[in-house]
Image (cartoon, rainbow, N blue to C red; front, side, top):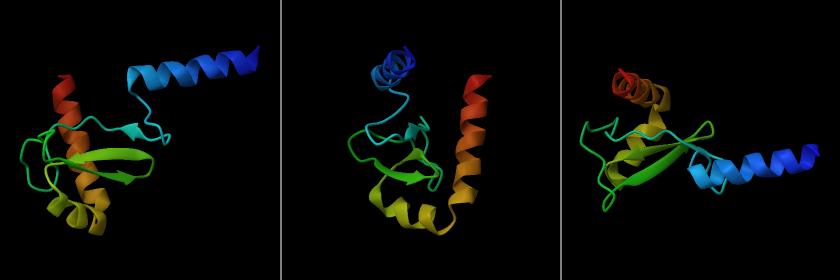
Length: 85
């Protein structure tokens, strides 16, 4: 029974988009924490950090994010907190 419940949870998470195919959670940010530009689906890049996928406006923002991820994670957290208000 526990295996069935676990399987249903995993399937639900995939269907709802909360967990990617690699077990990562999508942060859901719509603004690039590096540049401050809006994330465009056609040009965006992503970077994974501590099990979460962060959206960036372009591939050029990946390296700065990787050099100081905590700085940019805090920016994303502020964005998401403001969105909830």
